[in-house]
Amino acid sequence: MIKSKLTGNTIEVPIYSSSNGKSITSLSKISDHPAIVYFDETIGHLQTQEIEGIENYYDEKYEIYNQSEEDDILYKVEGDKKIYRQQHQVETILSKIDIKPGIKILDYGCAKGTVMKRLLERRTDIKTYLFDVSKMYENLWKKFVDQKQYASYQIKPEWNGQMDVVTSFFAFEHVVDPIKELQAVKKLLKENGLVYIIVPNVFENYADFIVNDHIHHYSNVSLRYMLLKTGFDVVEIDAHSHFGAYVVIGKKTQEESLKFETGTELNKIKDECYTIANYWNKLQNKIAAFESNTKGEKAAIYGAGVYGNFIATSLKDLSCVSCFIDQNTLLYNERILAKAIYSPQDLPEDVKVIYVGMNPKIAKSAIDSIASWKNKNLQYLFL
Image 1 (tube, rainbow, N blue to C red):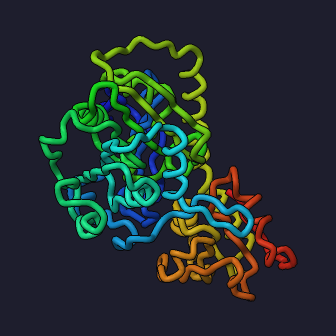
Image 2 (tube, rainbow, N blue to C red; image 1 turned 45 degrees about the horizontal axis):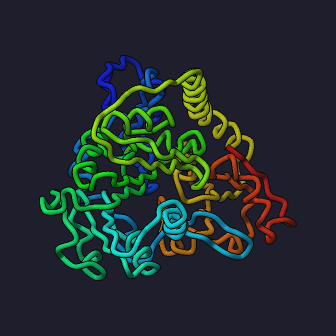
């Protein structure tokens, strides 16, 4: 039983709980904290039971790629061109917001702050500010902004009412109390200032559902609810510009309002949420059956992210797995469960089985794009 952080409703029974007591973090690390997910049907919102000591987790343990300045997540591959997530985020915000010279932008929950760093490289005529609940990245921030323009733990009082735009890139799924955080964002903004938020879209990327440090999994209805409840007009909720994510824009207003119609949306969202829960509940059995049918064959797991790690934790005998495969070159010096990560072109010759640990919506096209695998007699498990 939990209490919804958005509506205050008490939710008695979860719709999903990881059966093996393990789960995956948003950094694709295996965790001993189970993922337990509840559904608030009044606003179509999924909420995961927060892990114990979550404040300390983000302050001291949530290290994104060991604080490297350049590391990023592969967003998509177009032919031979690899496009990384932060690059796409910068292009998206530039296309959606009229960023005038001299504008003040604060990134709320900025982590390494590299989205603002990349934006500054494109727009040297703006002023950027950084805030996070940890100080572990301050050594990176000070390389591109003045000390007066960043803060850890507490917002600087002199920032209130000064910002034209407050951004938040993949942070609001992590926060315990989104209403409280959005109220703090509103305080930072000038009148008619904009909040620009990107959060995962669990309906496009089922992996988000089982990530144990993503406390909130938003729908278009719960996003509208959150904006209106905290005194923002809804400018846009875009589920198309960023794959697997919502791009949300709100304008600061004087009064809060909860006057909106949901129509048949809530019924559709409820059906989709239970479909996702059922998918993950059945998936371990599917993996076990495939493992039994390919017993004795050398295998690799394609995908070093959430799906790939879920497969690894579901296998009864991990010794059959030679390696992980991923197209993100930034991961090739890393290891998962003592297994090396290789490029598709470096797939060991003795591997005959591939567990495809990718979003099912794009997995087959991704595999089909690997020319060097076309003449190999490989057996695939698609999730």
